[in-house]
Length: 169
Image (cartoon, rainbow, N blue to C red):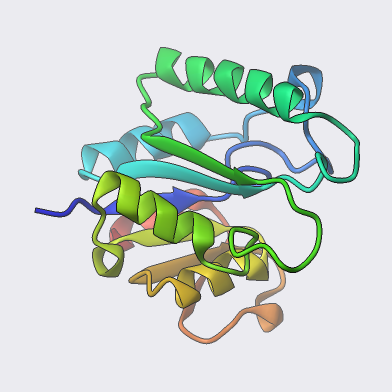
């Protein structure tokens, strides 16, 4: 049987979005992220991070820097009892990449690797491109963490805090 997953953007959802976060010194976990992720896991969801990391293409940090930060982040989450099942990143800056959100490539790759049921899965992001990727991949529910709901695509749940998602999962 296929599993369900919560797909998460990284910058702005897992950590504070501080523009091109590529080093541990710049990485700050979002307030409340640990209990939120534990609650999602307790509901039986797998956790998948899908993140555009154009800072690599722009030369702000390297793939090696990104990988080191990701290893540290995953270790910190593990200390909190949270297992991230898969982390996927697109390092492209503009167009052309099927993996770069709003394209669904990372989501479809995650679904294939983990045998996920996308119709029973959900996506949370803080950018319209996150929910557009969810729509393109036919994910069941999309949540947009924003203070500006006017910019959201149709069929998107607008949230102001991550905990607002829990009753919908």
